[in-house]
Length: 295
Image (tube, rainbow, N blue to C red; front, side, top):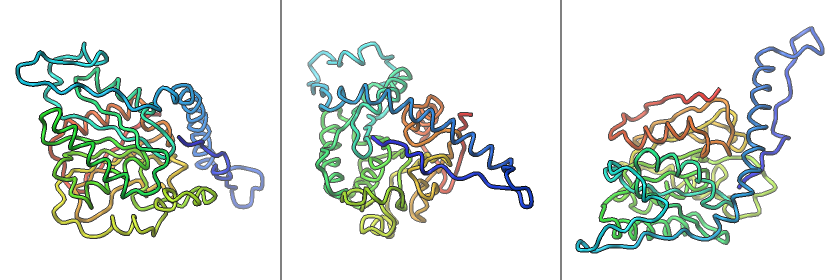
């Protein structure tokens, strides 16, 4: 969970020769930033209320034998039968957060037919992306065994997307992950919030870290498709383009989101619609792009 700092708002520009008169394009940008900041604060307030409910790991669906009646958790018992066609979706939260960040997205996916949704928590004591990626791999093996599916899709917010990418790209997770959707993930590292660099995970998310360097290495046989959602108003991605996947060996689609900030990415209805579309698509050409507008 991250608090949007006001000191990242840019200063208004001035027209040459007209002191005191703001430049119109920058006025529009600043107005958009103010609206996005207000939305971020509202989302943060709501998330603080939900946060305690997401601390514990969620209950897992009980594995069943072919002779058993279908066992469906109460929260998904009313979902349409067509959702059985979708792969399981694993939702992975960001730094100092938990699964409660995905309450809205999970509900959206469930309403549109996804029957098997798993929101994973990794320990707040985790200090290494590699360790978290190994644990993610064990969770995914268990999910595949329990559901009888050989592959899953993953949606990762912020650091969660980086953990999932490390699993896919460096630990052979592309065998298990068909599509990895990232939301505001610092794929090339972010230089924001230097005071927080005392935490090992934050240092690993900075440009030039060992983890970022590992992810820049060749990956010619990676089978996972990447879809990265990034916003020009994401004040935690510095520069904002770091949330795009630019690796030459990866099949990647970068989707630009307009009008919202970092915390809104996993909860905004327009982004949820884009995620559903990304998970439904089987093939996407490398280098494809798109835009989601929430203005």
